[in-house]
Image (tube, rainbow, N blue to C red; front, side, top):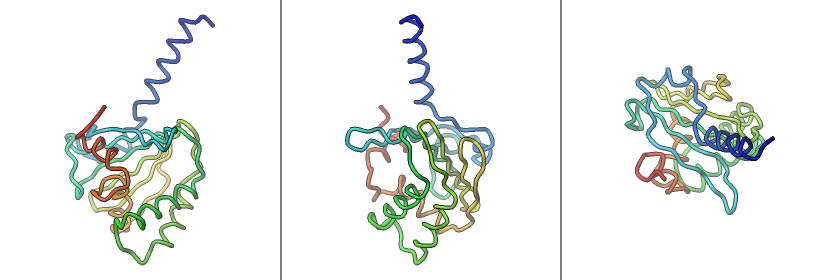
Length: 175
């Protein structure tokens, strides 16, 4: 392959990795969905995932439908994603719930192992439920409103462990 072709292919791959692979099915639950903001979660020297937040007319409201899409840049086991999600809820005091163990077990059964380029999307529905999608396919619906609030607080609450990413997602500071 010629060097110029390789550079073009690399540029296309980089562009594709930087855009959210969200489907019409996912966005159908968010009326007039538009991108609110995006950012990348980094840990030490690694990019973990690119995150994208969609809401009606591009205006985020916690009590209205929205979609949060994560495009993974590294491989993770689903049970580790579930465990880390609960740790974030507990460590950041994002919510109080007697159901953390149950939620972790449920998420461990919902979340598949992800590989670089895979996409997980969580959609907060009109009724406060959560629907999860893996690479565009619905994998679960959780009707527990308390879970929905606590889960999305990981990224969107003021007490998040990643305030820079939160600002980017809310459109306050996109690079």
